[in-house]
Every structure is written in structure tokens, then in C-alpha cells.
Image 1 (cartoon, rainbow, N blue to C red):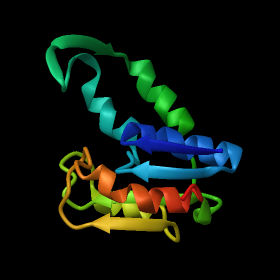
Image 2 (tube, helix red, strand yellow):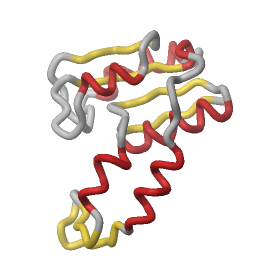
Image 3 (cartoon, rainbow, N blue to C red):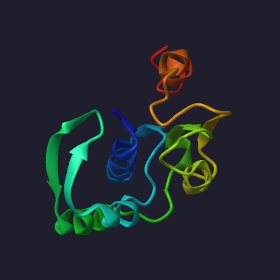
Length: 130
């Protein structure tokens, strides 16, 4: 079993990997979503469609806080693909969260990892699927 998560999904993937002792591939993972999203309580618009609205409730921050973990137990289970050009998250926080893990630090890039497909061979190799 392995999990893959991007951004907030990377935060969740870390929680699952720590709970299940499985491998995880993290794509520009969120490190402190409770801290970062606490300023966004209330009505929000979807980034991909400003006409789409949703409500971010205060208890969501508490739920995120409850999922926070300490240092990762098995660094060898993690592969993180991190872009220095991420316009949403700080690459230094991302790399600092996973010391000893397999990290591919990209010069430039973006939060969406627009060149994701070029990294698939390395991801597949890490997951022993190649």
C-alpha cells in the first residue's frame, strides 16, 4: 500500500503513512494547514471557479490540528517532490518537515507541479512499480 497526496492531500497522506506505516509520495505537501487556513474561516470561492462558493468552518481548523503528527517515524517511506517556485507553500518548510526522506527539490516550478508527468518514472521507481 502507498498513498500519494498533493498540497493538503500531502498533509493527509503523511497522516495515513504514519498511521499505516506505508510509503507516501508527497507533491508540494502542506505542512501547517491548521495555521495557514485559520485566516480563511468564512465564505470562500473556489480557486478554479470564482462562481463556486463554500463555507470554511472554524471546526475544520480544529480537525486539521487533530491530525498533526510529530516527526515522521520512517523517513525511508517518504518521497517528496517540492518546487522552490511554489507560489502557495514555502519550500523550506516542506523540506524541513521530512529530514532524511527522499526529496526531489525542483528549481522553479509551481504549486500545481505543471511538469508532473516528467517525474512519474522516479515516483514509480520509489514505489517499486517500475
